[in-house]
Length: 237
Image 1: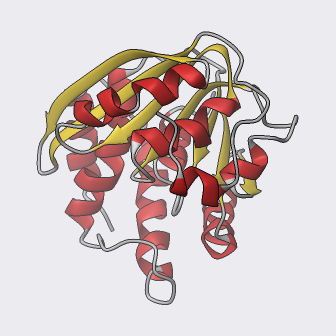
Image 2: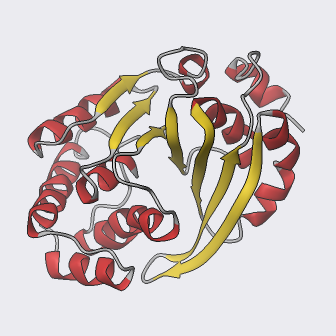
């Protein structure tokens, strides 16, 4: 399905060494993605080399830009077809990963991938603003990530409640996303966070990318996250 040598080389260029077992898992993941996409809209990217660069390597860039210790607990909010959560799990099976999405059809696919690859993940069907109030999930994670979900002002309210104090929220974004971070500074402060870093870089065949990191420095006030309609209508400022 995919060119495993290309994936291995592109990953190595980011300082990420993938085992032959991981490469086989990525190949199977791509195969399942393309096959399922024929009946369920998971992605517009189905060409094998583009899956390698625009999905797999883009997601793996998180491991290059953010130091994630062994055994860390991470939640991927709005995982969709498993990006970046399943990709991170293939590269780092030591991570304790929760894959959350509000669309059950996508999660059925994600669960089938996790099972087929022989990996362990907690697959959760929930809206982020509901799970963020649930003590099973609230302030339980070392890392929270989200890729192509919403702007930082909105996303911070969805994601920061999941973080333990001292944890990192890493938002995966396109080019020049630091403006988003500036607009979201007020919301981040209200939610108990502090801007940690904004890393901008270029990925081959993928263009300019950004990873915006927020550190949790105090507990999120109990009233957050609000209902999604309130979040959309009146973003925190």
